[in-house]
Length: 383
Image (cartoon, rainbow, N blue to C red):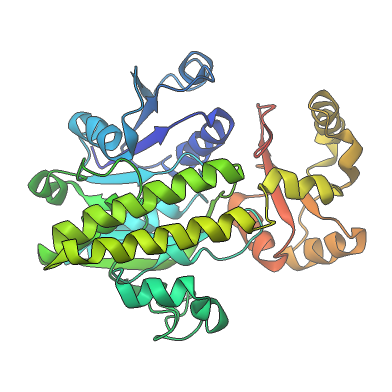
């Protein structure tokens, strides 16, 4: 077996369905197994998706194991020479997996790699490439200086702001949302540290891979989509608290006199939670309630089918019109989208190739992109 893809799911069935569809396309000519661990979801994930994807291995946990334990559970069953830890709210273009594997074959010293990630608005996600966290990087981020000087290697050191997202780089930290690792390294290191429930485990594993003498590589191409920001404000506060608890574990494990940093981390946590409490930003879905104009990109033969699905899911009031990709270039599609003053785009795959769709997203940053796949009525980011 060449590649084992491990996906940990928790109550995001619609995202998971679309993720698996893109993974199946991307792994078409690769000896691949897909293992999904469902962390005691309440959305009937396995009964609904298992018949759709009979070749996928589904593992049901009766409790929420957290990210580390769930991934390690699947890792015990994985037989691939390479392991991809993948979030369920990601979408891969067809060449992603082959490009990553080719890099490993050509660079024996690469122990793990990640790729450029963009969110649903076509914006680059800075966690795609990171440095090891420190008190100085935390202060510069929380103070807002990192945002003021995003391209600075000093002020935005944690996100490696001085390194272009459009070029390949050796980095210190990879994101657990897409992290491909040599299986023999994971066998030696024991996978993720299960002291982390959620957050921090990817930083910890990145550091241990580097200490084992391997490099970590960030690949600028191809880019993938990673949806984020769906949580309510209350959930975001909960996640913030978990994140800083993870940072406490990390500094105590890896930094000399790390216990002395705990009061400072606690202070950072309180400050961050306060900022989020007074923040006026809401969920992505709440934002889209104010920005409704929806333009559909699909072949003409599928237009009525899409409109019917929109009506069934109470989204037809957002519908503007439909444009047909045919053999149009991305530039022509971009120009057509601009004519409609759309705020949301719904793309049917494969009426437009996933790679072209991501290119279109990046040319139209600020518009929110949803997807629907042939043979499915599931629309991404539709609760």
